Amino acid sequence: MNKILLFFLIFIVNCSQPTPDQRNNLIEELNLNKFRKNTYTTKFFNIFSLEKIKNDKKLTIYIEGDGVSWVDRFTPSSNPTPTDPLAFKMALIDEGENVIYLARPCQYVWSDICNKDIWTIAQYSSVVLDSYKEIIDHLSRKHKEIHLVGYSGGAGIAMYLSSIENQSIKSIRTIAGNINHNELSKILNISRLKNSVNFYSIEKKIKNIPQIHYYGLKDKIVPNELQILYAERNIKNECIKIQPVNDASHNEGWLNFWLDNNSINPSC
Image (cartoon, rainbow, N blue to C red; front, side):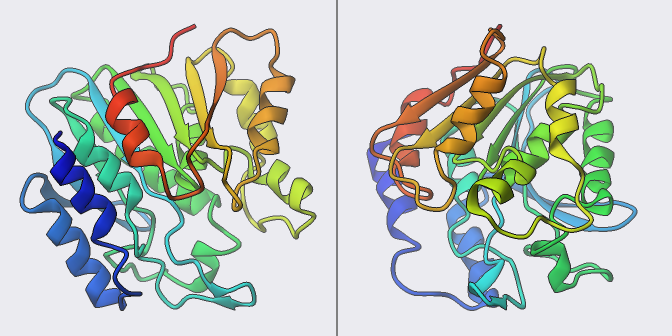
């Protein structure tokens, strides 16, 4: 991964606020046919994917953030496709032989049940989470070593997937992650996400899975307290680590960091 490509990944989204069609074009421009386009058709949703698969060995899956969930604090977006697909940019940096990028429901491709609740108050509902479980179950038939990377709200998806007792999932890494939406609602004193799974129960199920949670010290979206409290609840657990990143905010500073750290998988 050279510095010129890294500059291109940072620069390309800083020119304007694109429309949904332009956001679709943006990821095509970033991809440049490096990854194969795919759509997973699950029971409830079509999930957009970009994939680089060379064999049946170690697979790393990157899960996108919330995208454009809200226009402002009072107005839900009509389309959650991200203006800055940071998880895919990180996937592009990853030089592993098998890398898959998964968007979130209703990003890039539409489904019959897409509505504003899906990307606002029901982000971690059973219909959403079950869709990713279907994908993981499918992929684990071929790949017996799967490592999950979740950015922002995609971190919650990674946490859930690690709790489903699939033997193929070997580690979790989160970037500026909403790792527990129940805890985040308490910290921010906001309404909880309705119809979403309780993540305190998920924490108990994944305590033996190697995981590291990176958070930016300049992050104004997901407060650092979320990761710190999680670490405190698991203070004697050597499988769970958190790491601050000095120059990172919620969506800036991560590409330079990932350039140097993408090959590091957590261990217990």
